[in-house]
Image (cartoon, rainbow, N blue to C red):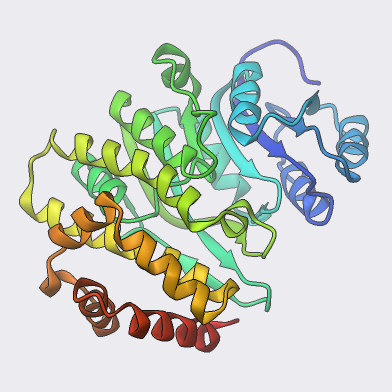
Length: 338
């Protein structure tokens, strides 16, 4: 482990049973050319070969350290990693993702600059087929430090829903006691990011992709059922609405509810991909009875939806054509399978 002076960067990786992908992740961090960084591995009670891989990297590179603990969840792991961090910035990485090593020079330059409380980057979605999809911010040019832009991205897109792939100034996290809520199974990092942005002052969005976000069937989001996801999403729904009130921007409201609607339809698509038509139809019926979902449909403006298939999805759900919706989403997941 490097010395006790303040470092430029602390990479924090929460890990649970990730031995299939972990080595690629850690190799991409070890490629960092700076000695003025640390990588904190938090092993969340893994029962596979995760611990052995972590110990191998700790022994080979003094910048790595390992925290072993019982299986208490990703939020507790990230909180413990952040508590131990000594870098000016914390950079969260998920254990099944990996960094683009060619972007280390830019990351380190931004960390050394220290001008912004948060620097957020684009990322590549990596599908099981090997295909990649680039995800950048809806901004003019390569970067933006406009707070209004950050607020719009935070409230109306999923691009700032995740804690990973961002330089987050540790001082902001510690001073304002920003932490991950351990009672949430999903969406905990989206709440964390709202809390962080609400207490921070300066921001930079960069349209440069710095990591590969791996999609696979064993991820937590894919394992959970629709009721659990909706319960956790209700927390984000409440927080986003409360944060919107600080701006009271009607156009922002419209875009925010368009994004909420997309969250619901994405959940339906995920459910339909793993269940029979009958189960999908029943799940849709139960979901449509939830007050939050009713509120989202009531507040979503039909003309704001695009592309055109979103208008079709809205019409089916708004009119209660659940059998048609179940058939549609079941067919769509087969057509979209990568």
